[in-house]
Amino acid sequence: MTTTERICPPQWPKWPFVDSTDGVLAAMRDVLDSSVWTTRAPGREDSATQWAEAEIARQFEVRHALLVTSGTVAVELAIRALDLAPGSKVIVPALGWFATAAAVIRAGAIPVFADVSLETSCLDPDSVSRCIDPDVRAIVAVHLHCAVADLDNLASIARKHGLELIEDCAQVPGTRYGGKPVGSIGRMGCFSFNQEKLIAVGEGGCVVTNDGELFQRLYALRTDGYVNRETHGRAFVPHGSVRGGNACPSEFSAILVLAQMKQFPRLNAKRREVAEKLDAQLADIDGVYPLSSSPGTSDRTWFEYAFRLDLRKFGGRTIRQCGGFLSSELRLPIHATDEPTQDCPMLHLARCGRPTPTALALYNTMLVFHHRALLDERIAREFPDALRRLQDESLEARRTGS
Image (tube, rainbow, N blue to C red; front, side, top):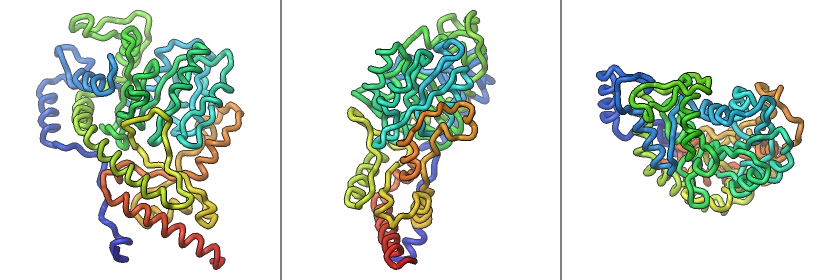
């Protein structure tokens, strides 16, 4: 590789995109001509929203899927659907984007932060067990970066204590655990379809479940308190016991969901192929540890490629200094993971006071980069080379005191 090629590498793939812009525009013109732009509007026996929900249910192997306006709303509606008593607590991981804990608060419950596993960055079942008290009613298992939580042990804990298990699958759609798609294992599964996610529509999300009665409650929560019209002809019928809001997506978002779902299996297979090559390359670099997933994971998905560094092998540089070096070398944002959730200023009133040392350790030693780079074979060659340069220059700087 020449110096010019290293300093100015070709642009990494953009994200999001759709395979067929013409097909998407044609479908949107059909919606414009129909004068029915939302699933809440009567007058159509079917809709793009219903087609998208059917495709999600098919690919994720569940009976019911409900499109909503965001992944955060999906988690909030899932918590609301449980109809928890005031003062109820919900266990969430101490690492990850704060939106999951914020959704719990908006649903009227109290988040309790459990620590995570060093190998997966997902909920540590032992920490979850220590967090349980008589007010805990549910566990939200967030599958983070490219890893699945230990669902076998978490489900066992939930059964033992009579708790509900919800999966936050925003970052790993398509992954399987124990032979089943994530999202189909807990009582409900929540997905995000925002700009950065693997199924991207700008903003959007969905909730999936195998429980028909729970689906009707979710539908009412999303659609101003009205139940699923499919069971009542074409009329909206008030649920009667649910005070819902409006979290309905537009038909235009549903069209993008359909387009993204169509290309998702192919793109996911490509990311998996490149990530596995990258894992193999990094195995030869001392002090670099790609994030693993819980045993039983298959068809693995990468939203962010995540890896830990033993900073002693990198001259004692901080994780942010390492991320800055790699970002500059590759012209690709490579950054630390999110700060421990309970330390987020927006959640300071919800802090539980329990120590979460592993979450803090990962925050200080782990870097991630976006899945779009895994659509290009070059990352499996250039990223290990950049890490080696970082290691060599860091150790040389320590040796010379520069």
